[in-house]
Image (cartoon, rainbow, N blue to C red; front, top):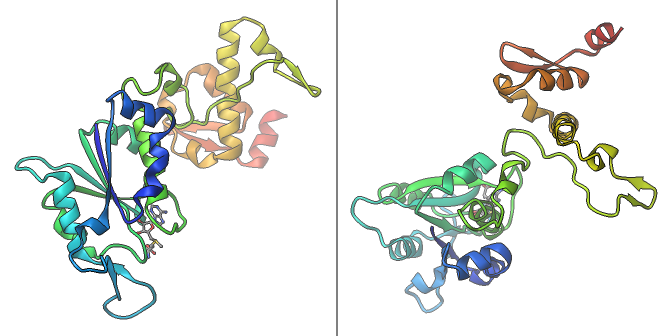
Length: 269
Ligand code: SAM
């Protein structure tokens, strides 16, 4: 995969030289280039922003340097449309599903906004040359797109073949199957009066798998019940349904529904 990032703070992307993504770059699994937007300006002050039309607070990123930069780094070619990701709190939410989708692309270009964002005409113009996707890291506002790009490149990069040593470790992670991961433990088995759950020391792989699945449901119900609202109940085994019933969830019309407290009390009587 080839990744290009355009930013007025290229140094902000230095962590992408470290750890697994850094190694993937060294090994040639990912070609990642960071470009300074200011090198695409033409005035002596290397200006990238100006006041907003219509008034209001803050500054807006000018269209000219962005068009120059995107044309140059993406090497706009006939018949190809690289994906242009524009980090924005007003974009679609970045999820593990989107990370998987983007990991299939040959080329990703990231345009890091600053100030009040990039002149909207850049987004309109870019549709001719790119598949444009405004993407939000979450429902909060950052100062710039760089932190969002660090998160997205790491989430996408680790899904590329060869980047994570044992690909099986990607399968059971939180969000890979719509649930959170089960809790994990290592040695020693007893630590400051806290014990590892005995089932994990039993050597019984069937029981361990069952316990882990149950913990996935328990944790998800406790911390992220919204994930269970959207969970496809078609993939649940009988044991899963029993585990979920213990947590107060029933399957209704192929969806998980939380039983009302009074129902739960009646059913447990
Ligand atoms: N005025 C913009 C708005 O309200 O939608 C926010 C601009 S923000 C201060 C500056 C830049 O930070 C944005 O252009 C975007 O690149 C980045 N940014 C801020 N929050 C973000 C988020 N939640 N996800 C992705 N990028 C974000």
